[in-house]
Length: 128
Figure (cartoon, rainbow, N blue to C red):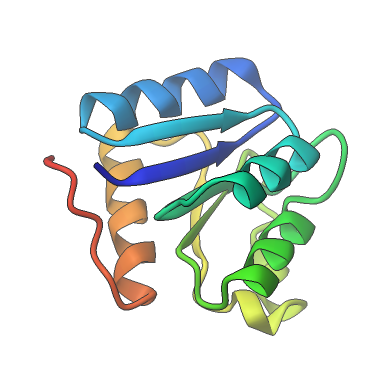
């Protein structure tokens, strides 16, 4: 079962994402902050991460860059309720991050996750 880290400071968004993923046979670890997300990432093995760009404690871009420093090419999905998904030009290491605008449908989330994994050269094997 693929394991996905979900980093979002909005509890309702985290819960919705986790439900969608669990129903589709993903193991989910939720983190309410960038610090908690990086701690969880350092303590466990993950197949992908979904990270909110705007977190209360730090920038989601910084979180994704820290993850990529540890695991180059790691599959990432960036989500945001704002239109500021142009961070890629400022962070070339994140050029292949899949961006997803909130609000999104469950199917959009699953497609973004598959696309991120494919960009990293692998494939998440959860049933859809």
